[in-house]
Image 1 (tube, rainbow, N blue to C red):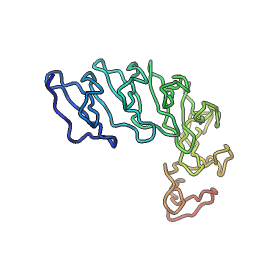
Image 2: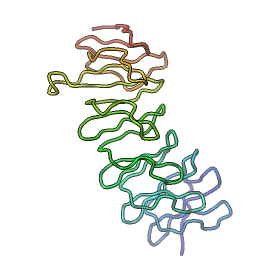
Image 3: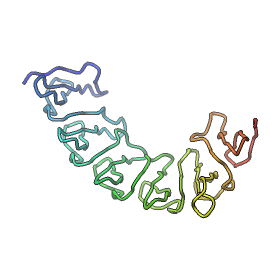
Image 4: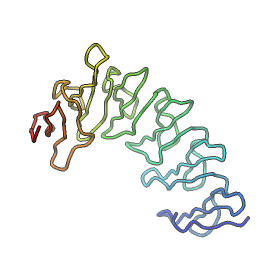
Length: 223
């Protein structure tokens, strides 16, 4: 077998990615130049710095994870896997639905969600049967599955949305803390997707625009 070393792919442990010159499949060398993963994957993503796992894709388009010894800790049987772990969990997709695994490759939250986000601030937004909620890394519901939209801002802040007019109108948003206590009413047309460096969050309400602080108080700017 002849292969080419990928000079742009070198891990902190000195592991290097190689590519077979004939099959164009990827493998890995250790820092001593020994083959630890033969060239059998269609893609190998960098190792996550915390859990030391790398996402790999088989020639059949299925994804899994390997460790730094080259062992598959998660078989290549998933339609999607995240290349990063957040709060000790990585998002995976199988049979069109999403779940989460831990660093050992164990499925900690079953693939039962239609849509899902990665974990942030120990919370992830998930959608099932047309509605959204928030779960913990252990799969416990933190926000019930009753929302038309929901996302995690961090710093213990959540944005949740519900449709007006008996479920047929536009979505109106509110700010909530991590205990599901509403800090505002459902009255905003849009709320920003992050907390700014000054601790404030953009909002839009009709023609009015401004900032919310993390207690839910408005600081109007213009409009």
